[in-house]
Length: 338
Image 1 (cartoon, helix red, strand yellow):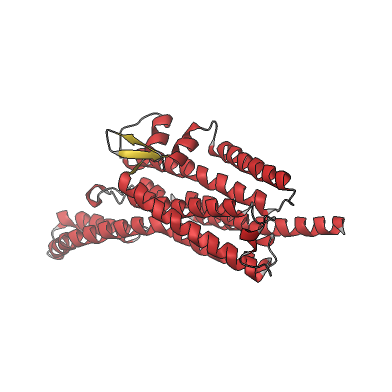
Image 2 (cartoon, rainbow, N blue to C red):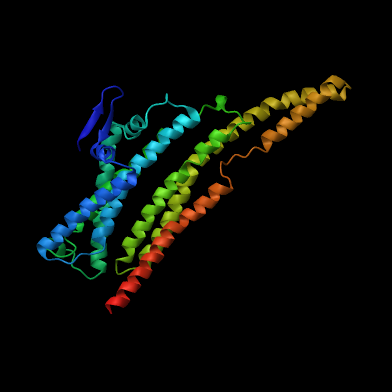
């Protein structure tokens, strides 16, 4: 894999990172351009060998283009979050943020290749098992050219892209640093709560991918037997992604709360003893300390609010809507053809 090394911090840009940065417009435009190119290559081979186009030949390139452009969207906004909420680095231009967001160390790039190889093996295995279950010979794809022959390279490329994407996603999440506990102010947690809600952006991206994968399942002979497990898997992934930064924020807030409550305890005892000794000057201090203790104890540890929960619920309808819509279109087309 070709890569560009940044001499300053020894980070690299992979070929897909450079591709994402070179395409014009927002990430969705780049995803459409990549998908259109792959679909054109697929249709060229279909025409050249006189084969029949399969819906997978359109959905797989669509998913590949989407996944390749996701890091540009996710990592760019993560970089913005760093600057907005905990000023990890001095402000810079959007272009510099995009480049910085897509850089990884050489070790990360090296390990990502193994993740890509694992993704290829998984994709190959799933494709072979599906072919056998559909009644095809496991060696048929290698002995003659048929409709599935030109789809196999796309499926293997999808496995490579998915494997590396999952690995890069996990590394990116680990790279996001939370503020030090000593700098956390329990009276002003808005920025920290915002950090805990950053997983919601990733949920949107992942559920769109699940929706496309569900449509791919509908094109097979298994139909809902594939799409239902895909939706359940997407729900589990969505919850995991949503809770990952939220749990870190919750642990940090809980640590600060416990520390401040422990610091308040001797002050409360002292103020209580002085108040019981009829020292009028300390009665107001005891009241203030008790009010502050109640405020700390009532501070929410989870960063979720009603809009966050509502958005997550709405995002869950994305794969459901795509699968239901795909099933309805398939029935409509079958009815017209019959």
